[in-house]
Length: 119
Image (cartoon, rainbow, N blue to C red):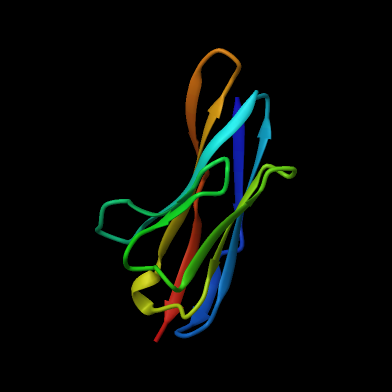
């Protein structure tokens, strides 16, 4: 089983930057796609960005040009660099990993990290 530990959230003023990290550990054969989602109060969880095992990326329209997802496969870690932050980016940010145990594919979620952007 894989455990995901997120870090890097916090309080920042509008226009500022934060970098989130999500490190995977445990027993697995390989990690495939890794994702960042977010959930604001009273709203559904939404996909922010995804990165494939080969580095292919995709972003929600609301964050294109401001957020960058990357990964370090040697460290089994995915990052989310968030620039030009807006109050509407305030949410709990979750990472998710698709991993292969050697026999079965699984999805694993992190515990979430709070990002608050003040105006």
